[in-house]
Image 1 (cartoon, rainbow, N blue to C red):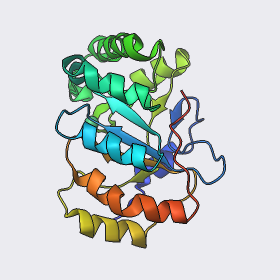
Image 2: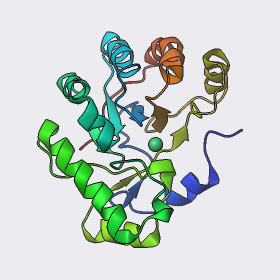
Image 3: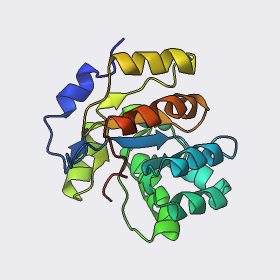
Image 4: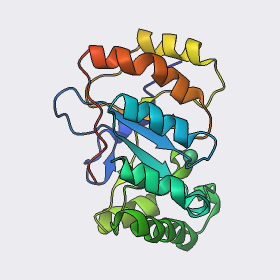
Length: 210
Ligand SMILES: [Zn+2]
């Protein structure tokens, strides 16, 4: 098992303005990112943990879920985290026409603008799948496709303690963008253990720049 996939290493060759994997290397920053929220079951506890450790993160929200749970999106914004766009319905992008894909992006951007006032948000395609046409359109519009450099594999149903042990063995490096998910309590339980350790090692946790 590897936390750094070959695909992500290839994507690192793209200019950051088009496709980003790592974050800005300012000091010893780790960029926590959470996909697939907001979730009334999981987001409140995650926010509480982040607050306790004074950590900021970037939440790549599913538009439809943000619409269902606006109070959670407000809490995310009020706590100083950044919003990212993770499509409106989390479809399989390769099954959609280009027009439908773009609509998923636009609709979610408009929705998120109601919370943070920003017209555009970093976009992370569902399952990381994007077509060359979509990438071109993003580049043409000076928009950013937001990937990650470190996949925590928190979606594979492992025990949090086991995952934490694996993360200790292959620790993240400064500037890593960590892929995690806000649709289970796995990443929160891993972070309960690791955030204090990472802080001791001198890491800081800023949100990705908007
Ligand atoms: Zn997702």
